[in-house]
Length: 169
Image (cartoon, rainbow, N blue to C red; front, side, top):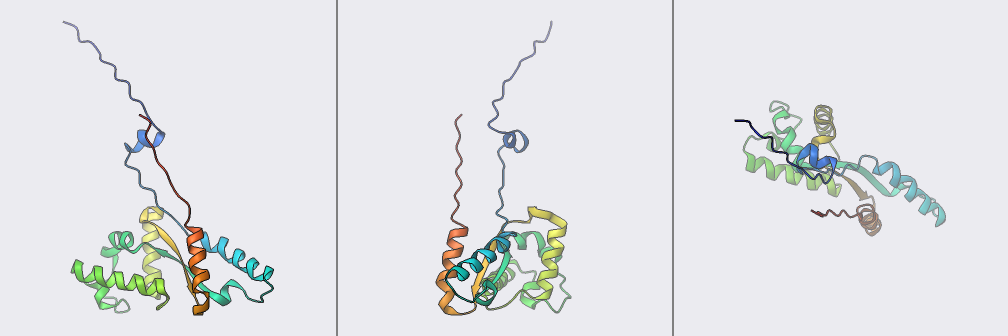
């Protein structure tokens, strides 16, 4: 008795489907945004006849998505490093998550600057994981409240892109 081979035809929508079986994660990496934004704002000021530079008006930084960052680096936090606030070194997930959320909001609002320990930890995690460590966001903090609307408009413009996906199968 002979065995017959059965052929199966697989329709592939893209190479991504072939490689990942449609389990694609797309991260938004904003690391180059300051390089694009700063000369743009400087040019706006110049055209408007203002003797200001972007650095005079805004503090600009790139902030890693704290949820993804915490997922990847919580085990890297050195519990004995007293430079890191105690609440962020906590192994109780609920307490630590609340503390990291507050820390993120304080960074985003400009209430605090990135501390040295955070920059070091962020670099360590990035070195280990490369670009797979989650989204980043451009943060623009006005140095004077009168520039808050401009900061909001710039962020809205920079993140106004849209994505669409479809399946024609």
